[in-house]
Image 1 (cartoon, rainbow, N blue to C red):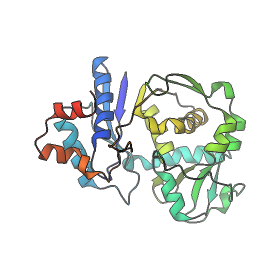
Image 2: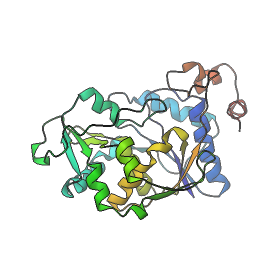
Image 3: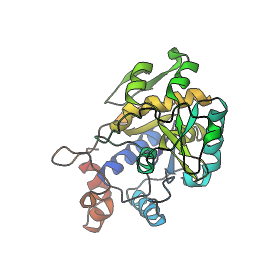
Length: 277
């Protein structure tokens, strides 16, 4: 068993991050397996080395240990671009010149309650030869699905929120997901979907343990895995840690930052109790 914790170094770790990290760590250790730490830092504008240092400090304070060096996605952009090139050669991506802000927002991991409208396909059909500086690269989902066997678009979830074997419905994928942004080649920017799917395969991750807010976007990664000939790990989508109003915690919730609890005298055991472990 190989699990991973993959935060973005764009802010402090909060209780929700702690729950996910501890769960992935403990499940791997209980099975005599491997636990890896990955920094999903492809958002070069928002990622900061000081946040990475704080994350590492928090995880160590929680008593978590990881195997091998920290994997930083920003150091592997060329490898992700190779995958983009493979999709381009297959006619499965196209350049998009739509609103730059919308495209940048689409590059990050999706969040609960912040699902962007499905892209209407304004630039679909543009050849790669028409790509302009700053253009995003979008997956032509319809073309991609046409090349895949629907029976192969399956994944297993062992988490408490969505247990069982799931099939990717091509019709639902078109309506709900659409032509997602995969990157912006030439600017060292790659989307969460592509980088995460590739790294999980490249690092031999057997079980992806993450929040239930990402369950609905698992089909994107399964589709990319099939297109690129990558294996599909077992998924474990866990419950989310919420505030008193039932809202999912975010990095702006500094009051629930692990560093603040530590400074106020909390112990790692206190943190485990707070998140129900």
